[in-house]
Image (tube, rainbow, N blue to C red; front, side):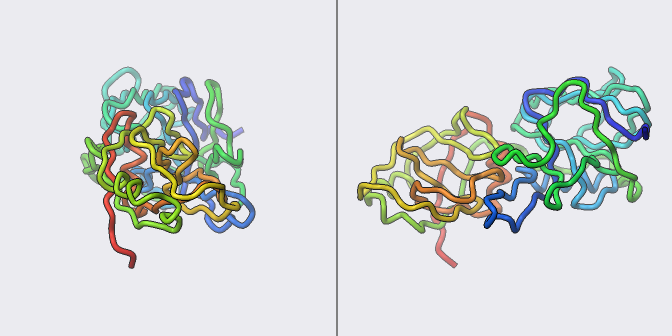
Length: 289
């Protein structure tokens, strides 16, 4: 057995393997999945010399602890937090060498939600439908990590970046989501549409990789009944019976019957991945292109 492996000592609240996802399978009911904060995942891959499609670890709030069986180069980014190697403080947002047998500790996030850990060579679990991503909705890909999990590593593709640290955006104090109304905004009263675009919402603690749930004014429907199931896209703002908008993220279902009042611009979704419970949310209308 190769010694190019990582042993998970502490899995944390939810740590999964993620990459660019598996687009193109919605007709089979398979979500895209992949990293919820793609720019953060791409940056840590660049820092360790990986190609953009290399698999990384995505942590949630509480970080994780890992022990390599061979010396590796890692980078930690996304939600900021303390990093240590062998009990000694190490850099966040920069390449770090972890000697064989030493413990890499990624601490709890001091801001934001999701951290990313890249290892030179990438996490080399077996791909499913062309991706190594964990999909919590369909169950495809590797299971969320548990203590004792052993992760194979690939062969490094290039040298780490020659930087002392890379700038990364801070998690939002207020989450501003630009939306295009439709396709089912006509299922809601004019007052409900006005509430969506002018009233304050907050991120709910019930949010997950499937969707960012909100707390705030319930949106009133203009018509009774339910829609037949129809296709759902990344960023769709679906309104379930309780009237509180849900923004679909990477592991969202590919079809759904609740009406979609608007769709969030893709460029705003990485910030949604880093917004902790209680973060104020504003939906801002933009014109259809």
